[in-house]
Image 1 (tube, rainbow, N blue to C red):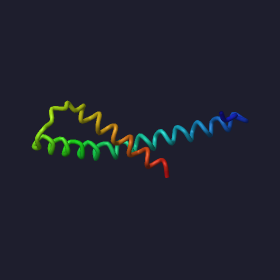
Image 2 (cartoon, rainbow, N blue to C red):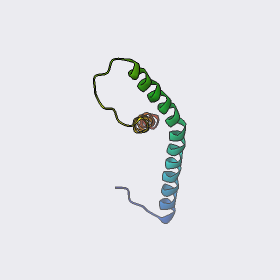
Image 3 (cartoon, helix red, strand yellow):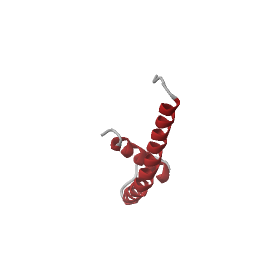
Length: 77
């Protein structure tokens, strides 16, 4: 737990967190369409191949999960 020494420190940390959330959202909106395109092409390729009968989830949910996983690596640097 981080102790807050002054109200100025609190507002500074609040602004930093808000800035990081905004940056994460902007990056998500850049990466999500790319992931959606990749997932869509992959699913179309699977339609042409022999199927094993498994039910896959939503294309949008898979793209969102892929985008969030990718952004996790962007912030680990």
